[in-house]
Amino acid sequence: MPARESIYRSRSLWLDGLPDALEPRPALAADESCDVAIVGAGFTGLWTAYYLAALQPQLRIVVVEREIAGFGASGRNGGWASGFMTGDPALYAHTHGADAVLRAERETFAAVGEIGRVAAAEGIDCGFRHDGSLSIAFSGPQLARLQHGVAGKHGRGLLPADLRMLEAGELERYVRVPQARGASFTPHCARVDPARLARGLADACERRGVALYERTAALQIGDGRVVCEHGTLSAPMIVRATESFTIEQPGEARRFLPLYSLMVATESLSDAVWDELGWHGCETISDAHHLFFYAQRTIDGRIAIGGRGAPYRLGSPIDASHEQNAAVRERLVSAIRAHFPAAASAEITHHWGGPLAVPRDWSMAISIDRERGVAFGGGYSGHGVVAANVSGRTLADLILERESDLVTLPWVGHRSRRWEPEPLRFLASRAIVAVLGSSDRFEDRTDRPARRTRLVQPFVLGR
Image (cartoon, rainbow, N blue to C red):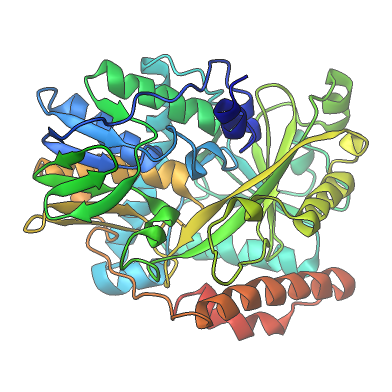
């Protein structure tokens, strides 16, 4: 296997499991002009290119990517195509009203099905299963948070059909987990293999005439140009779809807090183990800790489980050395042993991670500046599989000046203030992880809610 392909495959279970070779597409080798230049071949860039090409096939669309399509968060995440708000509903309601928040949330529900529709139409074999999602409480405080969250969403106008608490004994119809105190269920979530989705979407874009250059880093973005090492793209509209890697661009260092989310995966489990777990569908599963886990049953019968908590490092917030962490790995393995005991002895075959982009107010944004010729979508705070699809469709409508409900949703034109300069951002990130982790330990030990979470509320809620 070529050395670079080996590096790509080492980045996640999903990239490692791709059936096709990961030979990079040719790099941009000379100056070119186009109608729309897109920087970044993750979900935001690829969905934007896909919908632009579908709506106006005559457009010349060029995507440049520093590594390969799906190399970043799009090829490393938990594989949850999950609905619900990416951001603070109260913040959006303050600027746009409650009706706009409800419309936005329902748009995320529709996006789950839209991803499945495109995958089927384009023949993308990404294991899409629209079976819903469970959130399970293992303590009194966790149960109270679940109940409060469900009641809050119902208060915003969502229905029990969108999200509900399960009745006593109902959880075992989905999965058997020891010591569960309660659970909620939503149908608005699908399981996917995210790298297969990203790579398949890249192929679909090329079939529609989009040019995709890999191993092509954007050194400068703006003034109608994307300057790369061996050529410059000139375009009247440039889309910045760089998510957490945005902070590496000049002048953008404080745009996001790049938080690492890490995962592990077991070996493929036998049918007998799955029968013992009672996990017969492909519902995604999380718990209600502050530093929660999120898990899925993979295409090849593994448990892939992830969580937050990797430390942010001053001076090098994005670095490959952050993609594994022994303490987070042990916490995730312990969660498997505690909650999925039939898989307790399974070998852990993969451990990986990647950075996600957290705005100061934890709320996503989509914007376009026609005068400067620059558009942007991002700041998904770890919910990018669905949010990027919404962004891609919205950016396409904004660029083409199409009137649609999408362009009136509250994240369009939203602005988040920047994070504090270092070392304050570093201290905030460390405090978030430390306080939430200690709160979980306190609640697990005492079965009482931890009040110390108030210490980091200004950073977690972005107020």
